[in-house]
Amino acid sequence: MGLFRDRTVRIDQHGTDGVDVRPVGRPWSLWADAFGALAIRAVQIIVVVVLAAGLIWGIRQLTVVTIPLVIALILASAFAPLMGWLRGRGIPSLVATLITLFTIALVLTAVGWLIVWAVRDQWDELATQAQGGFTDLMAWAGTLPFQIDHAQIDEWLKTLTDFVTSAQFGSGALAGVSAVANFITGLVLMVVMLFFFLKDGPQMWAFLLRPFRGEPYQRALRVGDKTVTVLGSYVRGTATVAAVDAVGILIGLLILQVPLALPLAVLVFLLAFIPIVGATLAGILAALVALVANGWVVALLVVGVVVLVNQLEGNLLQPVLMGRSMQLHAFVILIALTAGTVLGGIVGAVLAVPITAVAWGIVQVWDGPHTPARWARPHRREAIASV
Image 1 (cartoon, helix red, strand yellow):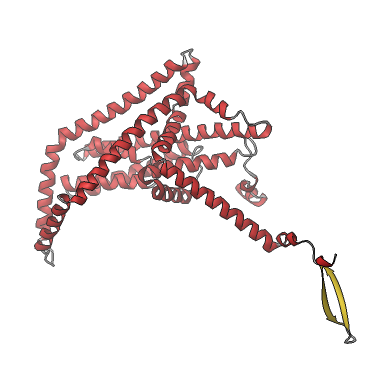
Image 2 (image 1 turned 60 degrees about the vertical axis):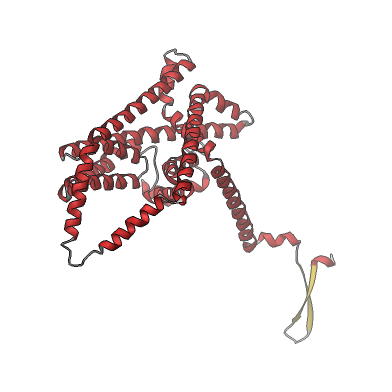
């Protein structure tokens, strides 16, 4: 008893000393007050951050495996309705998978052939127009109130030539060859994973759920269904919006007679999978091509076409197609894009938003089919205000 009590001296109203014996309690009770709760929460946050950092580090070390795995899962989710429709018609799973893969390969091959054909057909014309545009630019620079130092320009060109012929450029070329080899390896691995996801996806997920029972099993089922639904809706919705953007900008480029209209439209389609940033980059590239080949007036008209198409898509088409699958604020999308770009470059920027959407979708079904996690539920005032 004496170990857990202290003796404190006090002065009473008569000025005499008195002894106040108070129980201090057990040592671990120090963690029960507000400061102790804060310390426990801080330790928990540190542990979560360390685990997340370790997971991210492991993923970055195994990008040849993890990136093809995520892309294969996204594509399998996107084509899940097609697989379900084929299986519903009595087509065997293997045959349905081969039909789906052949359709994907056929579409990609056709798009690639169109790009190569358009570039080869218009390359000479673009090179001539680019040379004329550069000559006009230099002539315009000669009319400026200040004079450009041509010696400095020659020095920059010499520096660029020396870099191209240096050993550093050669090592960079070797690194590029290694990157190409990793890309081919990842592509083959992605195709193999996509094949098995399409063919045996439900069986593979059922195998992973065997250890779960009761409510955890039901929650895991909801998480799996929500993941496939969100990823599939995101890819199909984004592809539809991107196709509308590409067609609209293609029509504008053809009317304005901008060269490489088809490759630029395909680039618009691809960059549309990077929300917010992709449309801006596509518009800048299209305007630059128009500026070099057709002059600044046509370039301004191209900018107007891009802005008009993006406004129509953002205000009319995207809310209808993406509203249910992408319930994310623009601020969250920007943060996800930034984090994905820092961690994974261009691939990270493309995958960041759908992964974030999946995470938020899982939160929305954590406690039930239509019941979010407790911390994510709106307060009573918020619910009344939203009504």
